[in-house]
Length: 395
Image (tube, rainbow, N blue to C red):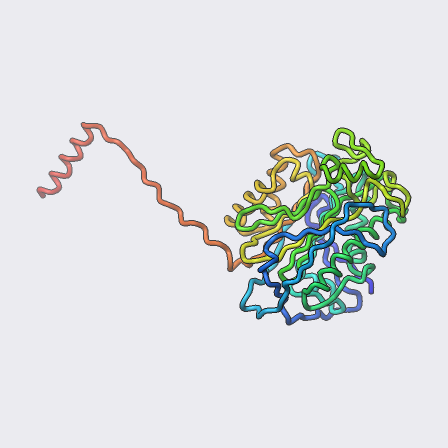
């Protein structure tokens, strides 16, 4: 099955929203069961970054066993929170001469993929790809994202979220990142010095899963508090520097081998060893996942041009104020980009804002308190006022 893409241009600088429909399939598969996951053990962020054993990989990373989600159960939809997903985005070339960012925004994955794909409801897919060394790598990943992330890896399909589905999703995404990396090496239209970071976010029912390779960042707002859903992969971070040096690389003035400011990326095959050999620069993603509750308000996904000049908490506070004022995620994304430009960012800028509640569930704005103005009168004015009041009372 091949997916066709309808590309809608949102900004004049290649900020693209992509809508996908399955070829030959016009019916939408309706999913009646609403996924429910008990939040008793899953209110915290879960992290895993194990390495696949069935794919040839040039990645040699610190291996951690994936945490098992075992407290999964189905409950009536009326008894639990179900996210109502809507999103907005904005991109700007910034001070750069060329735009190398790409992004994908799909609020209803089931509808876009057609009846041949079955996903928990609701389902959504988002991605930000921050290119470097030219726009080819990021453009290739965006153009081929549905094939790379769903078709080539036989993405798991089900109506329910359970341990088996979660494990299969993580395995599929890991394979997708690695296969996308290899595809960039094989495509003659992509320069060997072109690469891209990649951050993807998936929502299945109440499950939010983020997979990241590079320095884009996803930040969850929970009751106004910023929760990082990804780790920036910078060469200077101790774990990444240790891995790089163990594989024969080095970090010079914050740059991998004195060249690249990230330690994980797709492409950049002029910096990687031949496929199958360990390399300091890897495409292996890290995963974080969380079960959404009523306290989770929105997710920010942004390229490093945003995070170079502001903290996660500042971005969350700015977006939260905007949503309370006008409830427009597109405008919030634009405001965040404008704030980064005001702070003199030096990079391209791309932001996606994903809201988890409907317009009917907005927090009411606190009522404005009426301000009382105090004024003082001179003795002469007080005397005149007193005489006026006395004369009025005697009439």
